[in-house]
Amino acid sequence: MAPDILDATFAALADPTRRAILARLAQGEATVMELAAPFAMSQPGVSKHLRVLERAGLISRGRDAQRRPCRLEATRLKTAMDWLADYRSYWEESYQRLDDLLGELEAGRSGAGEREAL
Amino acid sequence: MAPDILDATFAALADPTRRAILARLAQGEATVMELAAPFAMSQPGVSKHLRVLERAGLISRGRDAQRRPCRLEATRLKTAMDWLADYRSYWEESYQRLDDLLGELEAGRSGAGEREAL
DNA sequence: CAGTTCTATAACTAGATGGTTTTATACGTG
DNA sequence: CACGTATAAAACCATCTAGTTATAGAACTG
Image (cartoon, rainbow over all chains, first blue to last red; front, top):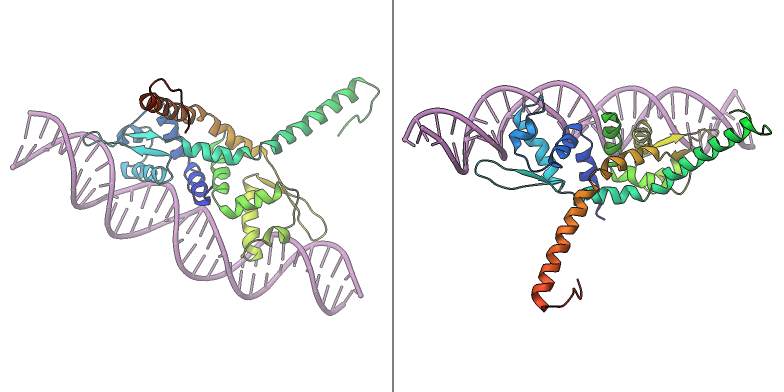
């Protein structure tokens, strides 16, 4: 798993405009103008975000006359998620600890009173 | 889901040194010196990475005399993964298309054969 | 061909980032 | 108290980033 892939992917995802663009593309292809519309940003600004997304492999671009329709490419999202999934046990463990604690509090409150408070 | 949380989380994950630090912390608490050891980087350099991770909520720090042991905090990783999970269907769809394509190729090549290999 | 639409490029700016070295702080030990 | 250890903070530098405006190119339209 080449590190620079994860570097570029996570860096691309670290911007709300780019995440919004991906969310829009999840509904289907869109042109640069369509993607730019919701944002108070110049067209070149959006084009730069698209270039970042493209270089990260998160989108690809076709051609339709003057238009360069963008489409979502989800495999890099899967790569990122696979990396995160290795840590799943750690947050589940956190929930487990919280769960245990809540269980103890519950038992303590209504029962023989072992560990009444924090 | 506050966007700046995802901003900070993904930005923190976009650096290989920081991801390596998280991987190390997955094995248990570690001091700054211990975390710095594997890297050809100054101690303040590592401290700065730790500050980024801490501000992103990905680690927390205790105190043990002069030491400031770091521990992994996984809930922000879960937040990031939850965001990515919304796109799961898109990469599964990609695999489905690839699967369909391979199926068609196979069917075309060997007639009635049912997908002998990849 | 002239004009309009869609997109990309160039040049620039302000601010963030990743690293350094040096210095300061806080704690434990002799 | 003086010293060593662990960490943070400060100041600095080079590079990257996100944005801008202005310009250029490419393709349709009249």
